[in-house]
Amino acid sequence: MPLDRVALISDVHGNLTALEAVLADIEARGLTRIFNLGDYVGKGPRGREVVQRCQEVCEVNLLGNWDDFLPAPQMWGDPADPSLRWWLDQLAPGQGEWLRGLPFCHDFTMSGRRVRLFHASAGSVHRRVRFDHDGEEFLGMFAATEATGAGPEPDVVGYGDTHDSFLEVDLGKTLFNTGSVGNPLDDGVPLYVVLEGVLDSLDPAPFGIQFVRVPYDVEAELEASRRLGAPEHDLYVAELRERRYRGDVRRGLAPAYHRG
Image (cartoon, rainbow, N blue to C red; front, side, top):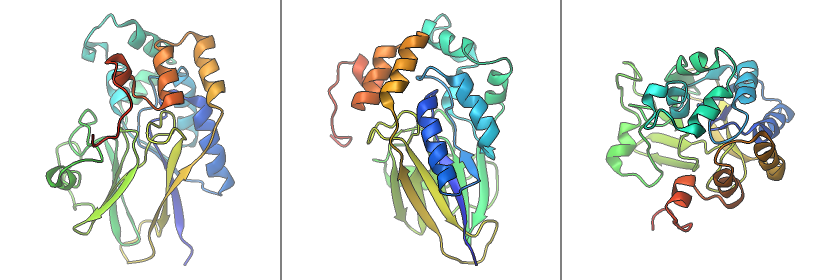
């Protein structure tokens, strides 16, 4: 039986250059189904264009934390924040409402496994679970919550949000992070995931998870940011060139191993 393949992308964050490179690679591999785990906007300069492309090509689009709070100024810590206002104003009419209305998670079966996808954690798009988590956090990613709804517990959970990819298998459960297309902080090269198996089947069959890195023209993206007058351009440079999270840059922290 031929196996189905699904591409998972996440955390594009307005980086249209990286998105187009990844989409070209997906197309070259003959993949036609794309699921997006959220965070289309913010950080990068072309949220409008990223949303448009994802609306065109993604079969599934999920809610990310930026997608939830950016179109809702009442959620901002500082309602007058000029950076957030710039990213919001860059969106086309109706895009903010579309983002906030996206579903929290997506459940399906593949090769006898129940798979659940969401952006950050089982309970909220605003709660972050790093790869360096404990057992309670691991099991919590498979739990039924008000956000996920009731139903069978998944065997496989995929998520994004942290911009750090990983794969962990324990207690018969598989947890993986897709990393980031537009703001990869682990390797600096855009990443997406390919799931391979028999879709919509509860019968055991081969099942695979592949991580794919796609080089792109980072300097062209940074030039677009500069040309368009995007906010926090220096922090965008630090993230894309040096893989330094902007929060660490603001605090003057040097790059360090995550467990340090």
